[in-house]
Structures are given as C-alpha cells and as structure tokens.
Length: 476
Image (cartoon, rainbow, N blue to C red; front, side, top):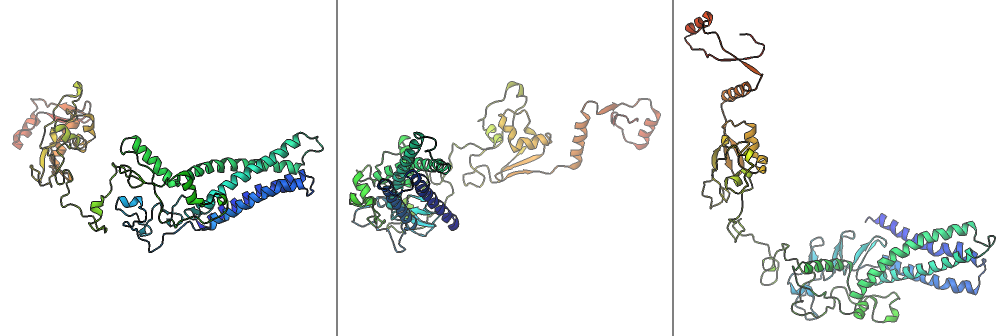
C-alpha cells in the first residue's frame, strides 16, 4: 500500500473512532442530562472516556511500533543447544530471495512493507503497518478495547433511546439529537459486529500461539492429513494456553491490558517437545509437490551448492524412456492399434500402418533411423478406421485438403515435410475432379462421319481423343 493511501486509511480510522466516541457524548448524552455537569453524568462518561483513551493509545502504538526486522548479521545456528528450533530438523535454513537474507522461524516477507517481518501475522491496512512480534500485543489490546468501548457506547445510547420512548412528546429528544442517535447506531453497530468477529478469531489464535499465516498452514496440514498424504503433525509453538498468552502480553496477568514490550527478540521461540513421529518441520511438506531434496541442495558440510542436472535428458529410471508411453498423434496411435474402431457405416477404408517408434528419432535407442519414414498421403482417407480425434490431427486435415493427391509426406520429429509435386499434374487432377460434378460439364462425342474432323486428324498425324469435355453453353 502506498504511503499516501496508508495515511488516508489511518486518518479515516481515527475519524471514525472520534465520531463514535465524542458525537454521542456531545449531541446525545449531554442534552439528556440537561447540559448540567452532575455526579451521575461523570459516573457515566468517565469510564467510557477511559476506555476510549486506552483504545487510542494502543492504536497509536500499533501504528508506530516497528513489528520487527531481521538483523542484517543474523545467521541460523542449527547446532545451538539453546532449545532447538523446528526448522533445524530439516537441515534447510529458511532463506528469503527478496531480501537476500536468512529468515528466522515464523518470519515472513511482506510485499507491502518490502521486507521480512518477525513473527508476521498479517499486514493490516487499518493501521498501515504489519502486525508482527513487537506490536502484536498492542494490536490485541486495541481490538479488546474497541469491543469494550463499542459495547459501552451501544448500551449508553440504547438507554437514551428507551428513555425517549417513555417520555412525552415535548420532553423527547430534539431533531439534532434524534439524527445523531441514528448516526451512532449506523456507525457503532457494524464496527462492533465486524471488529468483534475479528477479535474472537485473534483471541483464539492468541490462546493457541498461532498467527494468521500459521492458521492457513494448519488448515493445509489438516487437509493433507485428511487425504492420507501425511500423518498428523503437532503444531510446535502451542506450549499451553497460559504460556501462549504470556509470550505476547507478558508474565503478569495484571498488566495484560497495559501497553508493554513483549518478551523475547522474535528470533527464536520456545517449542513443545514432540515424539519422534511428530518431530517434523513446520509446515510439513506435501509429498506430492516437487522440491529440491536437501541431499542435492546442500553438501556434506551444510553449505549451499548449485544443483547439478544429470547428463542424460531422459528421466525414466534415470536414463531411459518409459515404454508405456503412447504417441500423442492420433494417426500414430491408430497405427499402433490403440484406438477404437469407427462405426460400421464409416469403415469404408483402412489405414496403412507405418513405422512407429516409442522414442523420438534423436534418441540413442531409436531403431528406425533419424530420418523418419516416408508414408504415402494417399493411404490416409477421411473414412479411415480411427477414432474421431484422428480427424483433428494435422495429417488428416492436410490429406483431406489435398484430396488424396498421393504426395509424399515425411513424418519426422520436427513436423511434416511435403515433397513437391508437378504443377501440371495438379491441374490435370483438378480438371478431372471438377468434371465429375453433375451439371458442370457435358460430354461431347463427335460424329464418326465428319469429314472435317477426319481430315484434320490425318493432316496432323495425331489421334484426337474421341471424348472432349466442354463447358455448358459452348458449342463445338
């Protein structure tokens, strides 16, 4: 989010809180008590303003506090004995390609902040800041005081509304007071419902020591366990409800509602002891997804190394071709006898099978030679005994458009090579094909006793064909 847009969001949030907090006191509660400062009025408004003050203070801390940066000199210590980290079990230190630096456990890269954030929960546009290790406690308190203050506000305005309904017309609220009662309901109730539901989720995450990102990871792991791809893995940072809350709000319960600095540096976290079957990295990897194995990505000393590809491009059994592969071309599948036969009404011709190899011509095991094989295009007809998908292949389209001209087609690994044909032969075939159409040409047979024709034949010395094809409307 841009800097200007983020400040607009923060300004809108502050204005909304101020409107709900102070318009109700100035335009609703103050006229209700007769615009006289009394003990009852102070008893009603002092607790509310105290809650609003704590709300603003925690909101300011959430906006202004840095959620946590990864130190530039930080390196993962996988051999440290000061309480192990779950990522150490894989031997693969987490690395951020954007920041070009290692990532501590539970740290993630924020695209809005353009850096890695310690124990990142999410990026909140309402505070124009990431919610991370050092401001997550302030964020939790801010949500808590929003819920308490909005509930207090709703009860206070509702009491005024009920009191107005039980009074006479001339003692009821004024027009301005009535309008602000409606506006306060319109603004306060949606905030209470929206932030209230959001608060319940984060209070649950606080009790489980889970961030929003880790909640998504837990859902993904639950799906993998349900599908039977992996066995159940215990979440490593859930060390107990009381301990989970203390890691964010501090060890003294009396100060949980007071702004304080969270314990720890955000670089290492206490984890629960797990059995050998459950001692896996978090989040566990999907076994069906491809990732570079640690044996290939790192050498024996744990240093990162470049991935060396095998010399052979064939991956089946590390250097061969899968013998069960079928040709992707419909004609070749038909020539191997793998396609279904056509209906009886279309079985009017057969396809001549040519050489079909299970490997491409440039493979060392290719037995048919690298030049491919020439197959007569006339052997492929529109009613060949192949499946319907044969008519979608390039071979059939070519030969149908070529009207079975008998041109030679070279089937190679790079496509098709059509041998050139005689142009006069193509013209002759075209004339013959057009003459076969009904009504286009008529047959002319000359009279046998015509002297002029016989004389011309004797003078030319060449025999003239006894059958000529003339267009309709042309007289001989």
